[in-house]
Length: 87
Image (tube, rainbow, N blue to C red; front, side):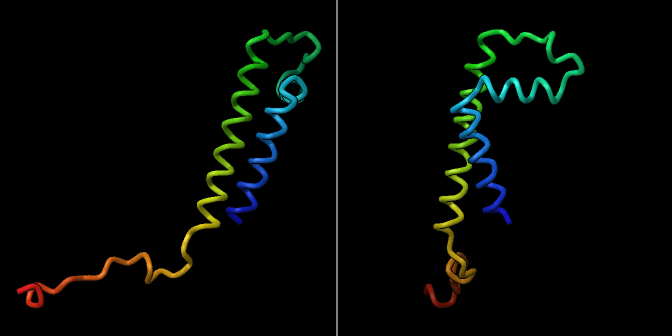
């Protein structure tokens, strides 16, 4: 389930990074009643592109960590040392 959410977030971030004007227009129509009157400033598109790139990169890192994680909980456990054996 976690991998699926990361995949969806990564695809969404990639689409936002590739087409920031379309993403801003989509979110503007979804969030405002009079979307035709709203005019975003030019920096909004650069910010949307940067946000999309960060989301896509974060999703890739998360997917990589999931893929390389060990499924064996015994491998992650630290072996306990006995004080009597140390002497």
